[in-house]
Length: 552
Image (spheres, rainbow, N blue to C red):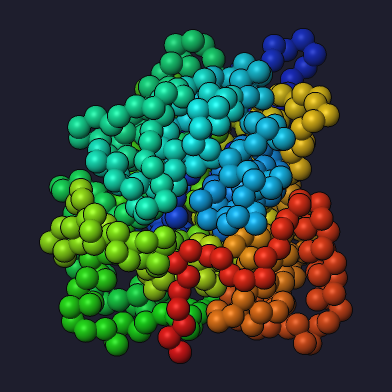
């Protein structure tokens, strides 16, 4: 049933070509797979060297998106997926544990997926779908905020944003209590647990359950790979030994060349200069290089193991005879993770006290590794910055969709540069399910636009003039058409708005604010409208966690 993995779900067996006397077509299954902190060029289908044959095969049979947009961090993206509205209206105006007293509890800043919005799984469940989720939740810790109360029939979820990938369920900072819930009840982890494999086991069980009940399914796999801590079972620790010994600048060169080769970035794209907070590989000592290369080896192994589990899902769909009736959508929840995790909460003292941070233990249970801004920058291709930034590297993510054969009319392996936003998925899924949002005056209706026509090949665009706003941690941006403004506080930014033309400068390297005050004024007015419409509370200081520190 899987014919394409995607960064958006696809329209289903709509009544195209069906006569009045024809029986309605069977409802299309929907499988959404979200990677956590995956970089734009990490998988082979987007130019990467990491071995991802299952994802690449899916992408080659589907439609790849080169302009798929999310939020700059994880839970806001998930909130927009499940509500169809901006995250400031859905309860995740900021990250739950990092908002501060002035934001916490304000409308739109509740820290969980609130009741003011429609919940996608509930709407699909009412349309006859079996709904399930396995993986990261990060949309509320309390029982009444858990998946069963948001429309999921079955669920197994990690409640906070990150944890050890093994059964020790070790926290990654002093802010979070690590809990898992199965169908709403807190449960312990079994011996031998590894997140990527365990979530896939759950998804397979839920898909079988839907199949046995004769229901179409909406299955959401919210993997925690390759989010830090970087960990894999021992037998996979050395899958990429020596592969990154030449450093991040060399990797960036290879990734840009690879992305050009597979057609997901323009041929004239260049390797952007290192950010002012990045180290040069040549400045590192031999021991520092050994440690840094090992981090990237572990990251690559995590991505390969994620790909292996996607292959298991595809095999299961084929075994059940559901592959050719399933829409598969794959995307990352935000850009690559370049934050300095030691600067989050009390981690500078907490991490060495809680974990064995030795080189020999890297990647194992009871280890803690994150790969930092330089590798994340290399993973972002020609785009500037990474996760937590509202520049392109933080919000433009890899993604693709695989449609059932009966629905797809575009060529397999096609690439679309159409602007697609994560809020577009809610109406797309409704169209697929032949469902509608119920009337409810106390709920905010989804605002995205269905991408069904794009997925079918009926159109090359979704939005006539792409318009979207972003804000997190005081960092903000607004886009209309090819123009984008972005604001970043010192010392990383100038503390004022910069203007970019993304058609000519996708790397956001040339600030045109002084040259085009007319365009700047138009975008500022659009930003004011975005703030008012979505209840954005703008803070002037930078509240990002683990922000890089400028070196030059």
